[in-house]
Length: 414
Image (cartoon, rainbow, N blue to C red; front, side, top):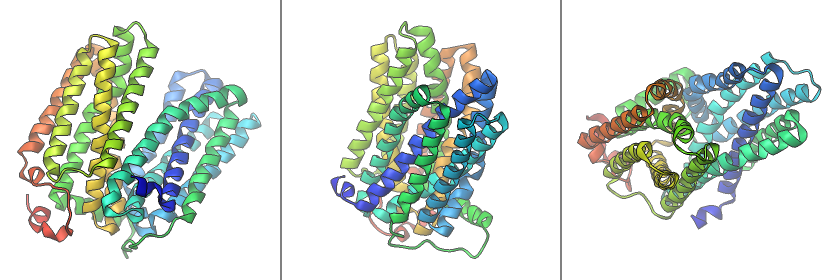
């Protein structure tokens, strides 16, 4: 971990991503508050925020393909500057009291679109800047930057909105986005240039999907990630607020400390993964983490006191932080350099793409019986762990220390 921190190029990447994520939270708070000021409608707030999620999901795979075609550095630069210009225009309209609701929708769509290009590129940049045995450390520190942005971003944005208004918060969003783009100009191109396809980007997307589908361990890993996200997201994002409201007298304080406990655990798990490379029997490790997360979801639903719930959240956060670090590092090692952007975009899409449906189903379950949401989610996650453990391809997965060609049977077989 300390050798990664001594890398100027990696620190530039870390700072660029942190600036982009802080800008995203400034945007979230400012746009939500501005929409309420303009309309007074909660429906309008939800609609504007949802407008960002659609292009992000739709364009995510294309963003990975563009990153492979034009290099991650150039993709991050273009996405950061484009978002910065849009947010600067929106900030100017807000500061001059001429902003309208339709302009907020346009800004939200642009935010989602640029995010679909920026984040796959930033993740695929890591193998270009660190050594193979430093991937866990590099990815872990990026995970910590996300957690730090989640903790600091909304709080800082709220202070700016209260003290200087939504226009100033949108200006801060623009500045952070431009900074994130300009920082990557100083990054090297990387040790290995990506393969340049002669076909169009949509064909590149198809090639990336086929690449993952034909590589059985990669395919199995992505399926596990997608299913886990689908069931865990609903239990956490819908179930926890309902649980805090119905069961604990501390109310909103309970909800806030619960998410803080998760963030603390995620940071600890990421640091642990940074200090230790993934176990050689990687497949069994992945199965174990999924099974423990399922047990954690079940324990969340029956936690009798806030103290017990906080302990469960810390443990689940540790598992999530370590598991995410190990999974992403394993996939980066296994993936051809020319496919990094597309594979990382599929990883992100496995979370972003399932979120709207997952939250809708979780809301329906929670409205009938909150316990059903946690137990159904836990059961589905445990079944996922069981199915993964029964798969020969998953059981043979290991932390690679040799070229990919050493596993031809797994790439073409079942």
